[in-house]
Length: 386
Image 1: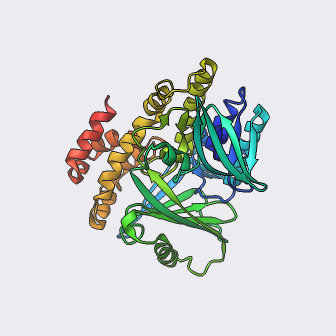
Image 2 (image 1 turned 45 degrees about the vertical axis):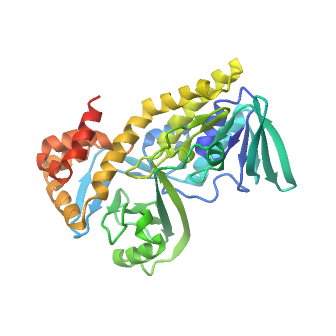
Image 3 (image 1 turned 180 degrees about the vertical axis):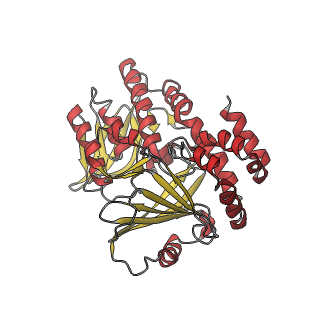
């Protein structure tokens, strides 16, 4: 049984549907509400076979530091695409159903107990409470995972509060994404401006000590010149950063945001979550075949996803520490040092799913960058060379 009908939960379900697989989704409709910026690498679209969900193609980045002197990086290649996230979620759900999974929409997960080697799972639907039996319970229920909490698997290391609004505005250059940094703009994280075809998505994230994100968004919209633009929709949410020590237990697995399998620099979790779902499903299928759902047997999932996307997450956490310690003045200094042809050429090779791979080539091109955090950057390079 999988708690959470987002792309990660449904992808897990599609790959385990040779067994009786039930997805429990608390919302009345899969894909609602949308709590995602929708900016992903094309590989994510391929993984979900969801090419028809793409609404825009991105080839460049405009990085705006506190001082306002923008650093522009352009590429001839597609660096990211903007997806219709609601439609993307529906595609993942349809695949799960096609493979044989059952979807229970509008059902809230309440908790679970143990009955021998199986679990007794309690949910509440439109007609009242239900008790279902499960050999395996998969928590794909987001950053405040009730499955993880009850299983005692611990929270994420950090939480970023995010808010974004879709404006009735068409950007002049729809191929460029804007990223704005600075303690006054988005303390502890960044703000984004994403062209989505007929509208523009603007949002930001704020660290726990940064105060309510809504005030920062209002100020940013005014600063960026969109204070009077018509608002189409607004959503808010929380991004978990830094996975817990364990993402498994007896009869339990955590995937996606429930396991904080997000990229520490951008907060994106689709690529990492979908990769983890693959490893989780493989582990689950083998364990179910052997009728061994013990923590020892399921620990293979933890090892596999960490060996795959976990290394990039670890390196991203180190880079995030460097970023979090930068003052606005130092952010301006970094952007000024990168605003040269050879550095921008390196930046243009970047991959949004593997940002840490830029660390070594950038330091070779601009060695003085190391001065901003010698110890952390040294640790990062050593881990990259493993």
